[in-house]
Length: 369
Ligand code: SF4
Image (tube, rainbow, N blue to C red; front, side, top):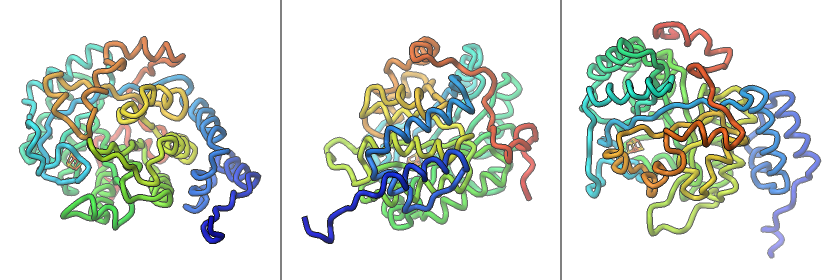
């Protein structure tokens, strides 16, 4: 090995101390320190163990359950990694009728789900006025917390949706690297994405964000910067999952080490002790027990897919998703699967426990202006 390429093992004591001050003093590390933690395999078990303790301290053995309904797979965007991008002519498109969505949510409510995530592509047929009516009808029919995951809208639209009664919003920034963002998102930019995220928070939503791990072309440094960006944003919820390569693409990027995916979630837990962090479906595509491992360690949220089966296989954000959705985590078996892991289903809506978000929970959508 050339001398210039030789990677020196960082002093373990210094990194152990770094971990301790992250946990005990809420120290926010620099990106290069996060890179060192990610690159030091010797510490990975310790990182997971700390993350498990931190999650236990704030959430115990309780897992919040959020049912997801994927109501439309139409999208005007062309994110290159996404199976429902507008220029993918190979998939069958669907849109659920409003009545169908309401019926599904009533079923969820009967089954005891306190929250629902309404997720869809950026579909112009689901205009803001249509969504406002839908949200109002749902809120009149059942006492359920509504989370939206519907992409970028204007400030006025976010405010209208919040005032209609939706309380939470998920929007991943995907990557905070401007170059990578531009590469994977034609006609858009990281700056635009970040502005949308800020508009969501300003509209008074409990806000969730996160990124895609292991995008081809990304580095461990990119991963570290994404972890840091997320933590500085102080999200109420963090939704982060691995990039799943399309069939045929076998090589993963340097940041696509599967072990690193778990360490990333653990570091997010250490840096965001109070955030709600779901074990996302994508983890089960490369590890049959991926979500189980996360729920036993860093994550405190599980989001079963409650989209009607006839549509579920069409919401193909990435390969194998529909297969994973049919697995042992079927929504009727969630309780038994959790108890087999020594975990219990949390009661209540599972609002944000961040002190700075407490004012968002009771109000009816006042903006922070
Ligand atoms: S990632 Fe989201 S915005 Fe991008 S194409 Fe897929 S559904 Fe549309």
